[in-house]
Image (cartoon, rainbow over all chains, first blue to last red):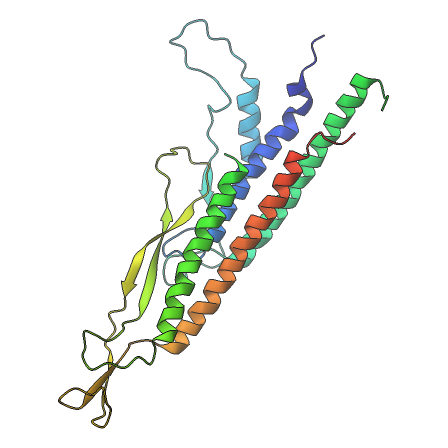
Length: 134
Length: 140
């Protein structure tokens, strides 16, 4: 039986990926808090996870080079505009800094949680390999 | 797609707010610079921000940084004051004061410094998470 690190860590690795993207988008929102005309954006975590899982499961073999590839990047993550409570500040910017900061914090903590899970997987794996010694 | 991107975005935000703080400082410092002609008088400066759309990276999964398109001079009319005794007065007895509104500038300054702070915090959090990522699998 081959040991598949991928199968061991796949879920959390994907979660970390999506968290990473989301962090980037929210950082962009915060950086553009004073840019006229900028609209707040966000990634829907659940949908992104689903599409990541979908991409991962499609392990199709290409028997002809004309076949389209079904790699994990087949489904791009959708970035949506966020619905905000504050429609407009007069210059077309609808970033709510407080909300974005909260989202950033929330996302960061969940990121760390995913990392911890991943770390736990590695630890368990290591323990299994060494037979519990040292 | 990496944490470096988050760092870069926070950095563009810091840079933009830094430019805003700079122009505000120069506006406030020059608020009372009197001169004797319309052209030589200091005019309030304001940076123009725009979202830096990264067209090179066509995929939609990224955040957007800020770009400072440039600094423009305010088109508001200058304050012209009749003050014949002033050493800088022109032949008609007028002096010209900059079109700087101190109250506006102060509000701008607070907003810029708060936004700067936010971006610093984003960078700080990213740094901490980054070090956690680097520690992955190191423990026993």
